[in-house]
Image 1 (cartoon, rainbow, N blue to C red):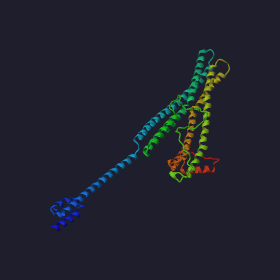
Image 2: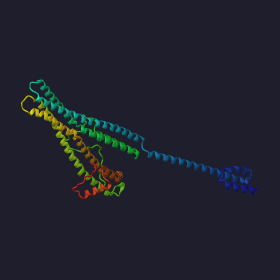
Image 3: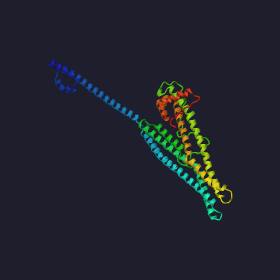
Image 4: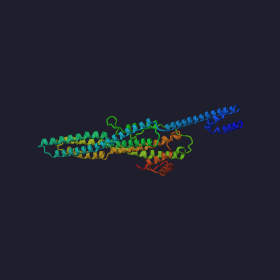
Length: 425
């Protein structure tokens, strides 16, 4: 019996680490063994107890570590997502921008209608006044009432045409319409940029501040009201239009650039040459054309009211003297005023001046964007060099190879640059 008990105990001790349930089954028979086997059974039960506790502890640790891993992954996922408040602010800015697009479009159409309607009215009044002055000169002195009526009517029409011309030349409806068209296009551009940021990038508070600055700068560049905030139509000096916020610049990067973020020394030199061509050729050319358009507009704006005033004086003196100069002034002034008004407002000289000013601003923006990137000290914080090169090439109507050729040709002929940077306009 002792041999059987010992062998059963040894068999039980070998099977215990693998199966806990067998321990429960075998403890019953083993308890009826002699006292010499009791110590072995107690030792086996103690080992079983320690094994169960250790297994439970390991499982608890594994479950806790699994929970920690899940929580850590959730925190990482949450941190990688964009701030909902930032997204809400960007959508609010998008709504405001869309509203501004509609307002500027409506005002642009309204002011373009002003230009056509007021021009037609002024020309009709000038021609009617000239006709009445001619009829008054052919009326005999005996028909005094008819003569006075024609003279007064002609004079009043000339005076009314003069007043309308002064107001029209002051506000320049064709230029106002061009300003609103530019504002509509630029606000649409901002709207598209915000959409791209929301779709592709991970927006943060810096994107919100940048969008706000762009909207406010554009509001200042192209105001909606006429009184008090209207852009000066006859400035003393022609300057490019500016509709973007000030860009903060840092000291130029003086270290070595080893192709980081798409940048290298060759690309930097290429961009500098492009900026040089923009400033020396394109920007200077449109400033020159803008100055000529401004001078022509000033001459026409002064000539129109003077001619109609002379017509009013001629009509007043028709029939009071035997000289022909009152009739000549009364009739010819109407014809000349119609020609001058048609050239100025029908030809939309103010719109041409604003177009030249806007084109100069476009080239200034490209040059400032390039220099702002190259003046950034940290290369990794710049816009990607290849993407910037592609954007500049598209803005100038060129391919990347043509842009490189332009930079190379300007390097060879730095003194006399014949080619313009832009092929669009």
